[in-house]
Image 1 (cartoon, rainbow, N blue to C red):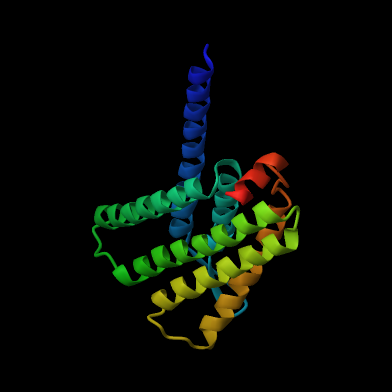
Image 2 (cartoon, helix red, strand yellow):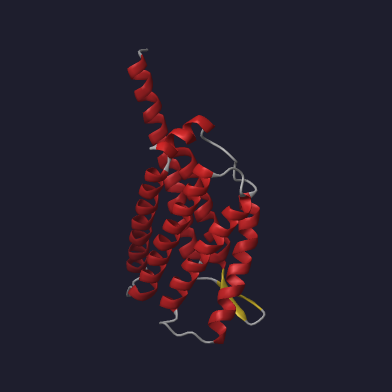
Length: 202
């Protein structure tokens, strides 16, 4: 096998592998939307089971960033958002219900905005720091603050009452606890140090 053919084989394998992670990201995004239909209460806060899935969206996106880079993660976020929107529309049509575009818009917009925030900050931290878990946790929290605020504002039709903020902060608290667990599984490095230096210079 020549060097050229071997290189093409490696690239092809990486492309297939990246699509596996992109499909996983899409599945988690869709799962979060589905779980958002089911509610439970903690005290006076009304929550949805989606809060247990949302932190995993950033975790998987960060894996894609480490393994395949910024551009591939951008593609993954875009593809997953489009597929999630398609799933929402198909699910509504199959359920013979009118599509409520306001919460759907909030869900997609919140997802894209928070993922872009997470990607940009995480990529910078990954390329310029080593093992800074507190900064990574802060990135998760910031992304979740934006995501939940946008999606909840659209769902509530821009109406903010006491119950809104109670639910908002309890949601962030639970998602933060899950994120603390997830970042402990975040490998310090995937790319060799020399490769990281080269990427910083570009």
